Image 1 (cartoon, rainbow, N blue to C red):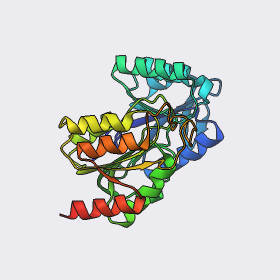
Image 2: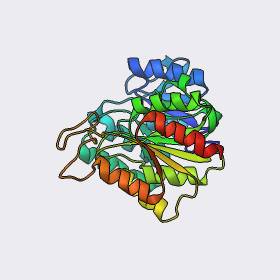
Image 3: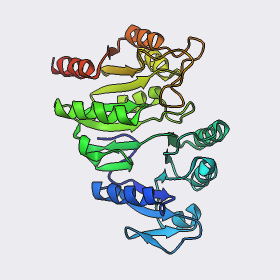
Image 4: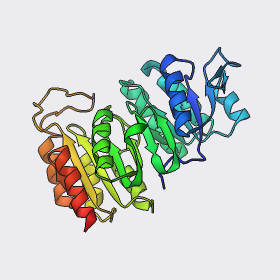
Length: 292
């Protein structure tokens, strides 16, 4: 099964006429995603890959059922576009842009919570559910295979690397979610774990974390409290990262000894999460543990 997006999920693409959006709209359609409409102010009436384009989200929603929106929108304009989607009742937003202003991201996430909506990102490659043939974003679908491992990750590239290794080891995936690499993101590891815990199609979960922030520690606390009964595994990047230097993502920075690799590994291990130091180790650990 899946969490968040399914074969029947009706998807809107905001910013659909841009070059990247056109390319990935085609890829998502070929994968099986049900894209029903696109939005680009001033270009209403056009079509992209036979998908009708509207001037506003309100107009698109008036003409089509819309459950989710994928935003190919530059960071400075993300807030207005996301709020427009939320105001029109869309329950799932996938925001790709990196470096969305912090206060903009905070406002979008607050508005989403008040409306019961879910935000994936900002700074996410999106999500994919192989069993449902649903892809919202630009993850390379060739690496993914139908199965029962749920994956939540802060890094797109590490996701592709590890999922390829999972697939090669015969461990297919139920849903893979890129939660985003910015300092402020919507869906966090703990919430992803809760979704996977409820999903009968997910039998185990892999978290792909990194230095900075507190998502890994929050996930550990949830597992410690008994909020997750399914086996949880983790791989964390940043074992040699120096303090005070950002590594990769905006959120991957150690600040005054908080968010260190040691604190994250300790929190996860104390909760019973099996943590691999390398990609090979965590995949081997999963294959051995889940075979018993």
